[in-house]
Length: 404
Image (cartoon, rainbow, N blue to C red):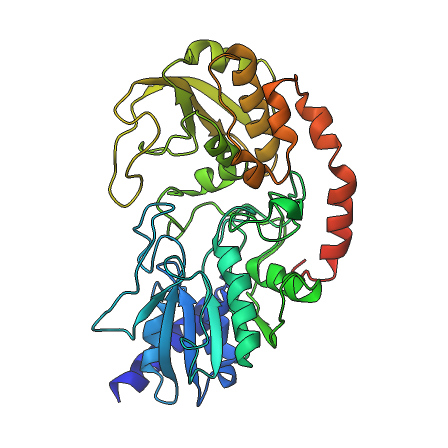
């Protein structure tokens, strides 16, 4: 009886939120209008700490409370089920008194095995994304779609917002020669789709070996021009707020250099620097570029080891000079252009200090930034060279868009 009462209370709360005109996510709409998708079935759930209802109730609790649904298995992506594991750290399967075994998809395998999917009738995906190609949750989604198809079971995406909006598309389309777990699909760095829309594109364009029966449970009241004012829950340890999510698409490329991207500080991806950078000069030069909707402030910071966020950050315990990035208008801010301008400006100021690593190819999506080692690059011209590919992506992605 208690289980039935909780389900009724949750549905009642969702209905109330709907009446007040609040946006509902896929998990809310599943319980409001689409319960038939899971009734009488054994469910596999791919999720993490972001899988919450509008009232902040974890998705797995609702599945457990439904008398005719069997939550058979839970799967977690990079950073783990609780979102408290540093980037790149491998994760073992976890046991919990309150849950079935939590299978890690960032440990011995990055794709659900057929043994893991044994006796599962339907596989659900419910994770908050940030809309950047190299954010690995979408790689997990695609691999899981492939596994579901191999197992002959349906795949359901419980859709959530792209917090940086659905209209901005920036950066080069991935050259599949550089395909990796931080870039699996031929999409721009900032691709302007929700995870549900992207799932439809992955299937429709044949970007995975096997395509499952796919259902997207849509959100209500989300618009393409929506930009989140905040994040209900940080989607990963180093994306603590919406401003970081907005700058991440451009500043993550700094990971492919010997410059600190601010890990090990309270403002990762917004603090950029190195021991050999003069923050006053860098900030002045960047502000003189008059880039849209962004300001740069001189900053001195010392990266430290932060368990669960950054164990061994670049320049650990070393004082770094650099800049703090502040976005003044999320809608006008050009994340990839800003990141590229900053990287090239540091290269111009410190050509003998900066190191461009081969890993930048996987982040940027091609080999163009390696030219920084020997040639001067003009950011506007480089980004303009990608416009034809972006236009083609925009035309192709249009048929997969769910929201206006």
